Length: 319
Image 1 (cartoon, helix red, strand yellow):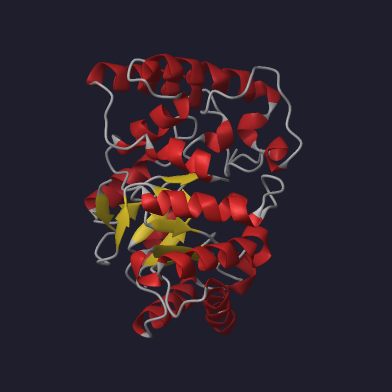
Image 2 (spheres, rainbow, N blue to C red):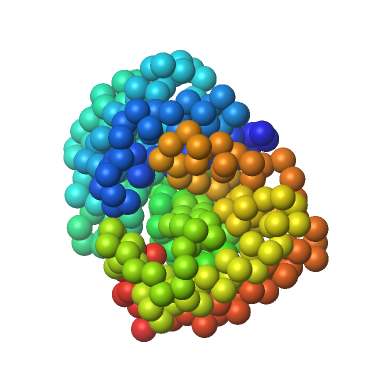
């Protein structure tokens, strides 16, 4: 496992980051805390020392599970990322939200704290949001400042009022709207830790054409009938290339991101130890240039045919 520094922050993370959203037991369906703890432990034992959570994941449940894992492993041995959600962006509310996250996590600092989503200026200005984050950083409550789901223009506005260390966009073989953001970040020493690396399961090879979903994915853009079967055609190309290396499509999707310029460390979720162990097998190898480009072509044929969706989780468009 390789380790990467997040921008200018000095925070070093594993090149794979364990995504802990599913551990909240809401969006992706029910889960058991012991299975989640197993995923966290297996990840750590295999070199993944960085866990990504948020106050909104299961209304704090994910943070509590991550906190228990950190207690068992040792807080000084892991990196913890969390996020503040939209209703808590004003100064006093953000300070309280941060303290509440610290309490649930059983720690006195976060390695990275993210503004989870942008909000309109008339609600709380980006100046106030960034100045509060900087205040938390100076107080030692957080070590690095991150922005999640921000556009390039929104990130540039935030940078006027404080140092941005890392961004967290949605980015994968099936979702590539933020390429200018990646380029800008690479040029300005801002780390990129993309989420939905496996497009919420579409790149795992586990699903068949014509399937339907009843959890939160039923509302997501890529799971709509007009996109779903076409997305699986990309997975078929990915599966064929990955098989040459004895790897699954999921491992190939993660490895492809690890090879993509501008990506620092992808976030990959797991509900149990078996899934965590499988994900880790994406590290330590690379596609040939020919195979990487074949996968990239299939990806672009799909993504260039998509409307300009504004968010992975619904079908709203910018048009």
